[in-house]
Image 1 (cartoon, rainbow, N blue to C red):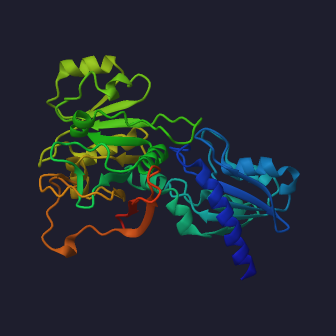
Image 2 (image 1 turned 30 degrees about the horizontal axis):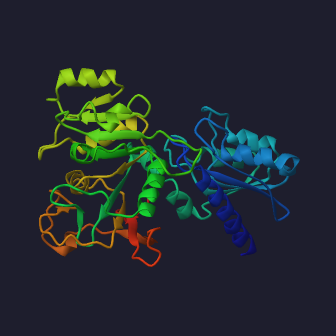
Length: 383
């Protein structure tokens, strides 16, 4: 029992380290590692970015000669194959580590179990499955990508208390306060791409870049527009910044070819997708193309038709809904869901699991009412 308690204690430390790499490691998972000798942490590390040394290697370097006879705690099964870096299993053996505690096995069906099996065959004592669910939760995009070939889909929306994301004229700046909007930049940082429909582009002229989060740690995530008829203006903020920040447009077969050539010269990347039977683009094809081009997670920011379509086809994995203390009290206000699925009885409603609540008090109103963030998974089972 004491050993199990210590295993969980040190695995929690490894999980804390792993989270430092979130938003930086894609298309690799975020991994943390801790080396313990005589009950004390002597080395720690995490995977900082794709292409850089893995967590195990960083922890071994940190521990130095103290690795001999020590125990390694790592959130993900050590790799036993050559990629951009050498196998971590070889580094573990060379370091003289006698025991390895693993949070979860590698979900990649082509390599699952290989690292643990190799270590066991080499005489290392291996324990698997310590805090496995917690280890899986921090890498849902990676797990979904390697097991389904699709990106992890997060829907974000700013909503009034009566369920509107804009006024009847389309005006939406700003529903939520500055602290809520700053948190959205964190969500963008943590995902590979941010996606909107052409309606949002025409109404809001957004940039969709990562700003106001982690100064000094710039990230150029992919901005994605769903634009079946290719109506994106050449002078939009998205197009004007396409040379410095990746911009992808998914369009249908009837898009204007001449306009496409002009936008390509401005740095826009295009993907042609068939249209769905109910109109709009076939979102399953859109997501598969995203995944094939390195997008493991995508933040869908609206508007109502796009959000409704993702829910209608059952493609949403997680939600982040920011509710502001405002009521439009106008039946013509733009609802969160436009079109979308048909739901005649409450038993058919989309259920949310592991619901979490957070508040954001406006900086200018210390005694004011806060925005309330509701976030949770749309799937009961985690990947």
